[in-house]
Image (cartoon, rainbow, N blue to C red):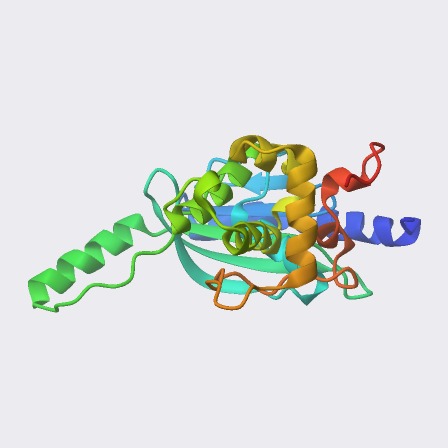
Length: 255
């Protein structure tokens, strides 16, 4: 049961931060975007936006980075000055700062995205002119969108591409690793995500719940590849991440 006082406190924090977004964007100019997220509604977490780098709008979805933070629950920490790319190829330097209420519970995030594509091109040109050899690691591509389904699809595509095999060709440890990796990325904190994953993999909803349950119960299989994702959230740290969102609807818990 939610605490009305805590909910009012969280609403007040978000309300106080919303006007700050325009000031940050005015300081850094048109290459800057600031997004305010309310994780209490992960499918439509964007409650305020200033600037336009990733194309988000109020009522839009969190990115896969936000889902990763959501999966960590109250153990989440700020992610600062990381590089990523948008689907259109823009190079973005970003920071994600978690929001906590007075109890320390994470309930949202303030994200700053700066388009540094031109800076990166200038850096590469100057390096070439100066004769500096060697390249830097290519930053990962992040899916930004106003539709949470597209974000879930992108995460699923990334995990499936690691195996270079269709679902039918995966053995049991690989299937459990796939579900474990999706769980650790916060996918199953989103409503109807179990059904979406089941449809993409061509399996029944009941089978998807079974694989998810087994992946949580068994832990990583010996010799299985590390998913490369943060540690999964526990029920104590984030009940939303510990229970598939579809389980919390009036449909009841599924097998």
